[in-house]
Image (cartoon, rainbow, N blue to C red; front, side):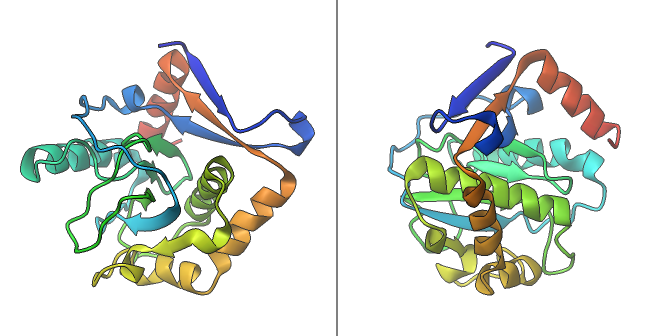
Length: 211
């Protein structure tokens, strides 16, 4: 894979662009995914891991553990979610958005863009960098898939669950997340820059070192 891969929503001048940098799957040593079920994104759902992230240096280990659990214990084709956001606002590529995610609750995630913030937001506050990283990612999702901010919801809007945790869900329910997403969209089109190779390796090393 090339060192840097860019997915651009549309051509625009750099002055009118929001860039979302995403660490690709190889950066966190993702296991191969199984055969997924294709779908078309028509809404966005926010999740939390329900596992405390007290030290952001642990996030890569968390993501690997989530994938192992989802594939080996639950029998899913891959990590359930499409993207993961850590406490510092770093975004990680997980399951391809081309394929339906998974859930252990009783709703059908077909059509859902699944964004998961690592942490337990029943117990922890949402760090500002993580909240803004989520908002920037969702701005890209809204722009990329032709959605509106009204398409953003929390997991508990679809199933009996505490997810995405009260402290994060309050930001969804109040409209604050939608307002932050809209503020990024107001700048102009949103571009996803997929970071791979040596650059991604350096960033993962820095994250695990506490940067």
